[in-house]
Image 1 (cartoon, rainbow, N blue to C red):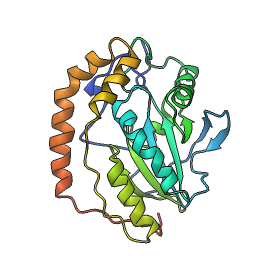
Image 2 (cartoon, rainbow, N blue to C red):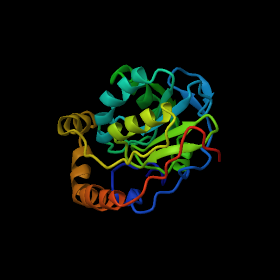
Image 3 (spheres, rainbow, N blue to C red):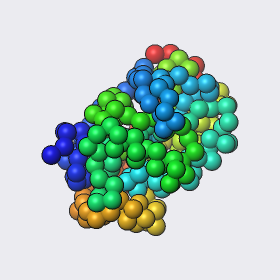
Length: 239
């Protein structure tokens, strides 16, 4: 039996897709003292770049793994910004990469993200109970852009790298953000590889919840977003 935050098997009931809590768009970002995969203890919001691009992820999240090949080059394209990953609970645990039973389990997985999967960004390891993750809404692959005032100027419950890139381009050019982040499914080959690496049980739980995920995110969420006016925050936003 695991904590209420960590789980052995994925279920859609582990997430509230209709009501996303956590830091608000335009609100103050939450700061935490966290360990990195390099063994340093750092403040999450102690960043040197003009903005911080913070993405939630885990090794067993097909969406996160699908986005990495696009997000990592953004770090080179926007070299004056700071990029980081917050390592959270395993999205689709399996026999090879099970749900975390201790902080060391989580730290080991985070280090494997760097060493085995080749992640190049700074990786912060969340607490075992997921305190930072829950403060940022608990979604498995959310992304946030935070300005030097500590304000969230862009957030998406699901990272769409093209929209994230557009938002960054608007910010560095001094324009308000108009980007809207529509949900895109994981790349099939990456999803299969991710769940194969996770081990037995990962794919079965994923496909069990797939119809609900498709309806909730591809149809319901994207339809709502289509008619929602962008908030248009900027680098100068105060909170």
